[in-house]
Length: 165
Image (cartoon, rainbow, N blue to C red; front, side, top):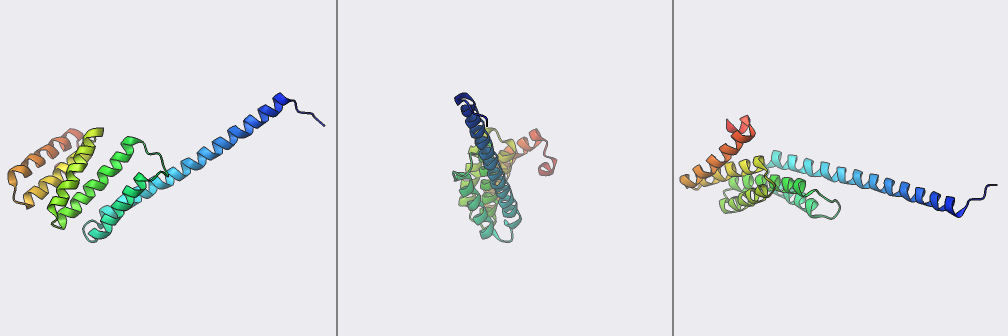
C-alpha cells in the first residue's frame, strides 16, 4: 500500500479541481452555442414571417431580445449589438408594412445609432434603406432621398450587389 505524501495529495486535489473546471467550462460553451443557435433560428424565422405573419415575427424579435438580455450567456458586445441591430431592422420592416411609420422610424433610428457604435456598415445600410422606404410612403421625398443615398453609399462601400440592384 502506497502512502501519499501531503504534497502528492495536494497535487492530486489540484488536478481534480482543474479537470472539474475544464468540464464545467465545456458545459458552459455548449449552453452558449445552443443559445446562439436559438437566436439565429428565431431571427431567420422572423425574417420569413415578417410579411405574412407580422405579429408572430414581432414576438420572435422580442424573444431574441429577451435571450440577449438574459444572464444565461455572456455575449461579446459587438455580437450582441449585431443581433439587436438585426432585430431592430426586422421590426422597422414590419412596422413599415403595417403602416405604423412612426414606430418603424423609431426602430430604424435605434438600429442606425447602435450600428454606428460598432461600425456595422451592413446594419446601417439596411436601416437607411428601410427609413427611405418609410419616408417615401409618408410622402416625404426629400427625406427619403437622404436615407436612400446614405444606404446606397454604404452598400457600395461593402460591395453588396444584391442591395445595390
